[in-house]
Structures are given as C-alpha cells and as structure tokens.
Image (cartoon, rainbow, N blue to C red; front, side, top):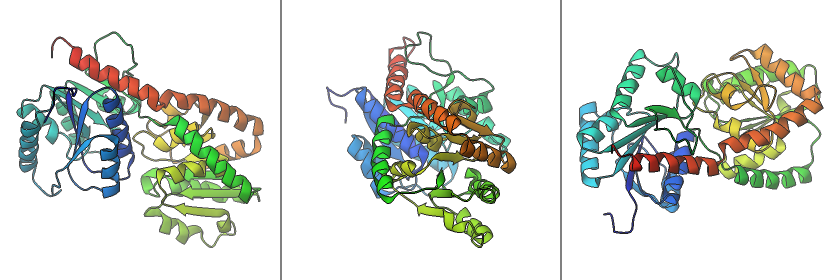
Length: 387
C-alpha cells in the first residue's frame, strides 16, 4: 500500500528477469525512477533468475512474480493483467514492449490506469510479421507515449523519429526516442582494473574483441570469417570472445583445424563486472550484428575507450560515428569487415583518434543523462494539465 510520504506509484511490466540487455536497461529505469522519488513495482510475467530478481529488490523496487505459462491464451493473460492493475492501482504503468506485447497495454486501459507508457527495444525487421507493426501501432494509440531505444527503431515502427532531450519545453510527442544507458564511470573503473591484470600477464599480439551472445543475429561467424582472412597476412593477432551461445559449436567445427585457432580465446559467460574488465585486453572491439535492438556492447566499448568496428545494422550506425568514434561496414559484408580490421590494425594514428572520440561519444549515453531524461519524461506526464 502507498503511504503518505511516498511518490506516485509506477508499475513496470517485463517479460522475464534474465541477463539480457532489456533487463539491464529496465534496472537502470528502476533506479532512475527511485532517484526521482517514485515508488516502483516490477511485475515479471514469465521466467526469472533469482539473482536478477535480487538485483531489482536491492535497487529498491518491489518485485511481483506473475509466473505465467507462455502457452496461456491472450484473453486469459489480459484478464490476469487487468486483475493485477486493479489490485495494485498504479498511477502509471510502463510496459516493456516484448512478448506478450500489447496485452498489458490493453489490460491497463481496461483497468482504468490513467497513464500508460511503453518502450520497444527492437526495430521492425524482415524477421517480423507485418502483424507485429499493426499490433504495436495499435498499442501506441492506447498509450500516452511510446518510447523507442533508438531513432532507427522508432523510424522502423512509426516512419519518423524524435530524440527526447531533457529541458525540451515542448509537449512530449506521441512517440520518441530515449537512448539506453551505460554507467560510463563504472565501466572505466573496471577497465582500469583489467589493465592492471593485463599488464601483469603481458601480451604482444593485437587483440580484436567480441562481447555478446554467440548467435546468428549477433554475427560472430562473420567476425571469424574476417579473422581467417586477416590471419593469413598477420602473425601477431589475437581474438578474445566474451560470451557463449549456439553458434560456438558451428564456428569450432569450421575453424578449429585452422593454424590460427590457437590465437582465439573463449572467455565464456561472465558477470557484467567481469565482462567489463575484459575490454582492457582488447585493442579494438568488433560488433558485426545482423540484427540489433540498440547495441549495448558497442556503447560499453566506447565507454572503455576502445575503437569499435560495427555493422550498419539498426542503431549501430547511429551510435558509432563512422570515421570519428569507430568504423562502420555494410551488414554481412565479410570483405568490408576484414578491410576495416586491416585498416585499424595498420593505422596507429587512426586507432588513437578513434579511441579519443569513442570516450567522448560514450558520455552521450551515460546513466546520469539517462536519469535526468527519465525524471523529465515522468515529471512532464504527471504535471501535464490534461492528465
């Protein structure tokens, strides 16, 4: 129950609580709202990892585990959401728009919730059915405002985009972009710790790095294809892979017999803190995605001051300023990726210049700016005379 001293009640719905980028960004949202004086409840619809749930609770959120079966029908889920919202009586519902998509938005309106927000974390792509866009656009009509995590994502769903900036005196548009956040200061601290360890171990090779899930959409196979080309020309090369996934076996089957295979280090799954220290052992970071909702690993690499080579997929070409804070190559073009890696490898002044601008670019996505933006958006909604 709400006491006399607490702020407005916000209920955030999220599909699951795991180790994905959406969950991390929702945790940043929770912290920003708590800092701004809001009372926050997070409703997890399906699966959860106890450790992640504890992180949310430790941040100060109340967590409700709905534990719904994914095979449950739409009408049943809407009924469950509606009952939850009627019982909790939040002042605002913020839907993390992923499966089950529009259902909690519909339920919030049926339950009489006065303010409804939604955030979509992925762009519309060739993998989506046209019905997905129809559902999302219908959901947007039921929301006060609909947020995208990048202008590329917003453009793909709505045909136009507008980036929210704190201090904008105009009314919030129906849909807009609020960039995801990283803790720049913490990443730099952890990277510095990693540098101390790397200096003790010593290394002479130039190391390209990959951080993320080894899956088709993340394009790790494209990086290995390009590394194969590069290794025929350069002896002192290394590849550090932080992460795991279904593509690892296919990559091993294809390349484990190659002479350069011993130059590859698979770090495996790591905690976020451990993963950030691994940047210290990388001279450059490659993000070869075929599909990308935001590109969190690219921003983390920028924060660590690393030159980034990224595909032009989704928001990556929006995050990375080509030739300024990194290099962009056409999606799925292995030859272009190898050429970009070759360019970075052989041009030390370029690497130094990109690294300097990378650190500056990362500040655009810092959690402090995100916190101000979240406070501005929510405060505007609650101060709007029409509400």
